[in-house]
Length: 338
Image (cartoon, rainbow, N blue to C red; front, side):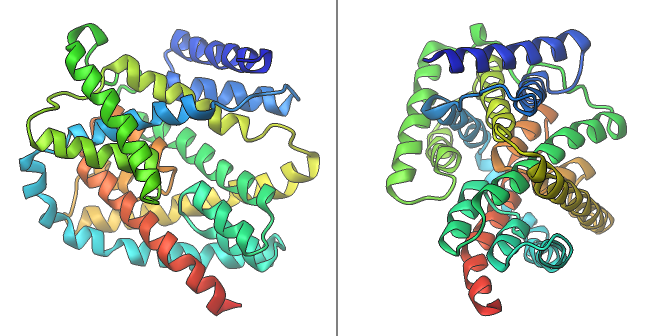
């Protein structure tokens, strides 16, 4: 633990405390994120959260896995029609996003293509680097996409659905048996590392989710992680997003971040069109469709879905399918386009 780490955590805690004091939504996610963003723009040195931050993400996978019950599995076939719309959703995003980055903002082919892809940030950076793209630009564009969506979505949910996003995201720590806590921590760690060994994308979330779901269906894990653990996960995610802007230059703000903001607004319009279609077809409640078709980061959308009390199985299955499609098809499409 260095002085930079301590300063980063202090900045993030100050942001969380301010959001709690003002009664703002998602204080443990948005507070650290906005505080670290401002600190980065002001030139403060920030440190990443490292392996601890990744481990805290595993509890989001555990929370989703613990929500998978036999009743939830029985309802999966009913999602088939809604899931079939996801490939169309991804195709529309690619058709709009690529020309925007290539023609309007002047990025080269690999940078424009992987900037337009609504997949996992790390996966898009890896693919973009292998294709010769601008990694810094890709990082800032995707970080901005997540930042804008994670900031705007809670405001819409609060104003439109009247949700209280300041409430604790679960039962208090004192109400959860220590044995269950140990099982969840073990499932998170083993699922994460096992997923990495298997080459699973999003291993820190999907690995724990799969293992916990099996334990939940077997009746071994019987509760979700307590509120304090979910809040700690939000805290580390907020730091990770805000810290990506450290060392940013005026040119990067003018081009990369502006491109990310414009793209995020276009994505919001596309998402609202698909949300309305899902709602009119009666395929899902409005809130679930809203969260399922918002192309934010996987971890961030899981956090918001948990706090909002949405149908986790519905929301997560759509995000997983979106990311799988992008990971499988984006490199192939990039080569064909070239």
